[in-house]
Image (cartoon, rainbow, N blue to C red; front, side, top):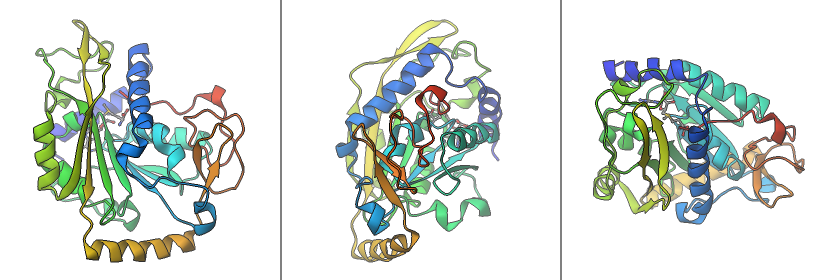
Length: 309
Ligand SMILES: C[S@@+](CC[C@H](N)C(=O)[O-])C[C@H]1O[C@@H](n2cnc3c(N)ncnc32)[C@H](O)[C@@H]1O
């Protein structure tokens, strides 16, 4: 592991217990979640729907740099299967605890420790179930990656041919004072490699990785972060790219969809009109929108699934 990745691992390991507990962190997480919810069509993914229950179609999400699971929480009800990857073992532990206490089985949502950008990607990240995603999302992790071009390329390799979509949520360029960092946190200064990104740069990264249909949207309301030196505002963007529809890609997707049919995944319609990924066929009454709970046991009050910085 490079020294920079090791700094990330260590800092986020320390941060995991208190991650997303301050009001400004919760607000930031809610902003990202709302931004995704408003852009479901824009993302262009064929989200989970009731027919999937009988057809067995899967909608697979890779929550990369998943942290404690705020992206999973935001999109969980629109997909059938979620895999998280994070460099921090403690973050992964918190993620999986939240998944289990939200009623999700390991098959439905599970995170593993790993770094897809290592020189030699370890065997445990080469497993079939960590490929062929309908959508991969990086929520506020991109400025923590050493080599953004390599990151986009490696994530693109994990997408379903012809339709797989990559979404990156991060900050427009921001000022960073030396040694300044979020309040009440361990030293994060060594974990940040980039002071934000611009549309043209993101477009080039996506294009160079073979992703088309580029989209770039900026959130109208800036987010407020509490730093040691006082509050600052940052602006969040969402970038989108998609695998090009080649003939081979279409054939390959057809092959995988045949396999999905055997798996028997299904979607469950909830009373609030949203879709929750589901295997048990129970309609979930009174569950909160963040519950990606598939077993019907998730309760709003438990607030087990929190995440997102
Ligand atoms: C700011 S947090 C974002 C967490 C989560 N996506 C969210 O929106 O709350 C950044 C995450 O990136 C992870 N991370 C940093 N570098 C990584 C890498 N090379 N590979 C995987 N995860 C990484 C950290 O451990 C941390 O959990």
